[in-house]
Amino acid sequence: MDAAGSGNRDEHGRRVAVMFGRIAGWYDFLNHFLSFGLDLVWRKRLVSHLAPLAASGGPVVLDLAAGTLDVSRAIVRRYPGARVAAMDFALPMLVRGRVKLDARERSAVLTALADGRELPLKAASVDGVTIAFGIRNILPRSRAHAEILRVLRPGGRYCILEFGAGRKRILKGLYNFYLNRLLPLLGRVVSGDARAYRYLAETIKAFPDENALDAELLASGFARVVHEPLAWGIVYIHVAEKKGAAEKE
Picture 1 (cartoon, rainbow, N blue to C red):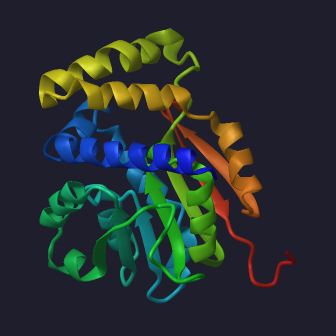
Picture 2 (picture 1 turned 90 degrees about the horizontal axis):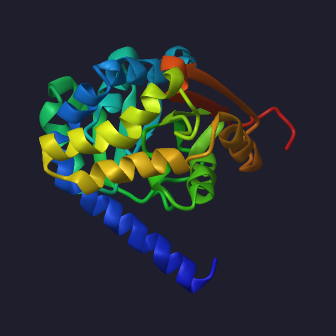
């Protein structure tokens, strides 16, 4: 990577962290309001794809781009005994999330500032990884994929919840109109921050479609990758699995 490219990407990360810090107070409300409450269902579905954890004792899960900790809480509730390392690069989001935790959740969820491209974790130290609506914000994605592959134990799953490519016509174009016109307007009216929701629409449109993301994950070294469409393909869950210890490299 050239120095200029690295600097541009670091600046991108700083801008995104500041932006999410600005909207932290409105983040949960807008997520639920703008998705008509479906984001809660999607996050629970994401966590269900960590299903092999149910058979293991005291699993450790990395919740990357953990935001206000909705996924972290869902993990603890579905898998009693699980411990969660909740990492994000926007401190106000994590602070907001900590307030929501009950006593049991606080004991099971450890929060930390972290860059998804350089995780402060040992190799093969976590049983599963989740990232909800966060992989779009990490550039280059390949570095995040490589880091996640490194910290996963053999057979572990990397579960991604993300918007589908906004270039596809969905619901006869109604969704595209909502994404391009209504979403920035509603975000500005409610939060007073039009730029954040313009950014959201732009990154959704620029994001690869489900097949391209699957290919990206396979190219990063994951052994098996599947995806599941939700809400007419507005969002997708991708599940990438690291090779098991008995499998040949």
